[in-house]
Length: 437
Image (cartoon, rainbow, N blue to C red; front, side, top):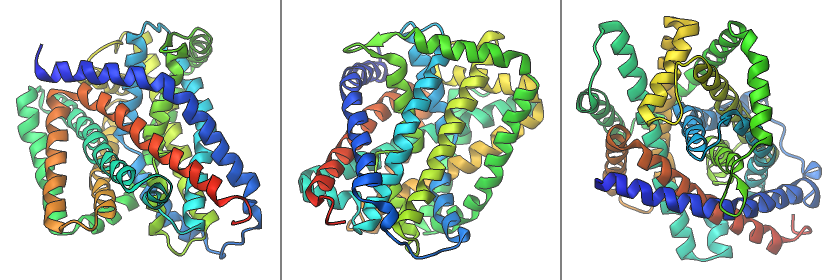
């Protein structure tokens, strides 16, 4: 057993142990935070400055560009695979658990942004005031590693997959791992590094974020075309969703595995409970608390739709028609997914997937530097850049040679970041009381 495989097994055991215990706590706390925001704090009585729809689009696009990407596809595929490993035969049941989770977490996204903007305090601020400066530092480091290394690794993996598959079709040549690393990952690391070193990342993000809407529209259009051409499969898919939901496999203290894995992915793809929505909302300083919260909640709903419904349906169709198999390795899962898309939509589908992966992946990779520099702005700029380049280089390397390790590390970091954030937020709300708002 090599070191990467050993670390993967260790991180898998840690993740599978803490999440069944943590998840009920997280759900209850999230419901309480949302209840306080919508009732106790009486948000309807807060009169925000009237702004146009155009003012909301900017912050919403920034948030959407950072959240939507191949990470949502890869994350859901990974959870479906883990569910299969646990012995769940009908993995589609995870979708219903995810929808239930979304009904809890979309209001949480609204609430954490609303409170942060209303009181003009960031997550690191209320974590420090309610817990300690050490917990604030732990939150900041965990969030940066999660975003740069974890989510960045997802993007590297997705871009690697679509380029490898595209070149395989166009040039009829399949690259091995080392060739993919040299000709895809390393040039991407260099490009991102040059943009950050030249301080051009914000301009680049603004440029490609304006194209994200087109990419998402094309991706959804591709899915609609896929469904229209597989209409006879829709009833079977719905049956499998219901059957899988009512025939769960348990883990830990008896918590359904589908519930654990689906909420992990909803948290990952929507970033609800991580505090990043409150941080991203600071870009829309002209917006009031309500508008800022809406601008963050809308991307959350879109990412949940893209990640859960789209990915699970195409995966289910691919499995039923023997074009992909679960359980399987990370790159094999992606190849099977893209083969399924291409089988129904042809080369057009492959082109759309490639554009979607490249645009969203680049946005997420560069957007991670925004959070890094925002949370640790007191550090020397050159040191920030060096640390950032080290993390994305490690993420890119493991995306090719040890992706499953990244996946498990992401789940552990989701536990740390969301746990610290929601616990500090509920203490902060309790300390404020209803009258202070």
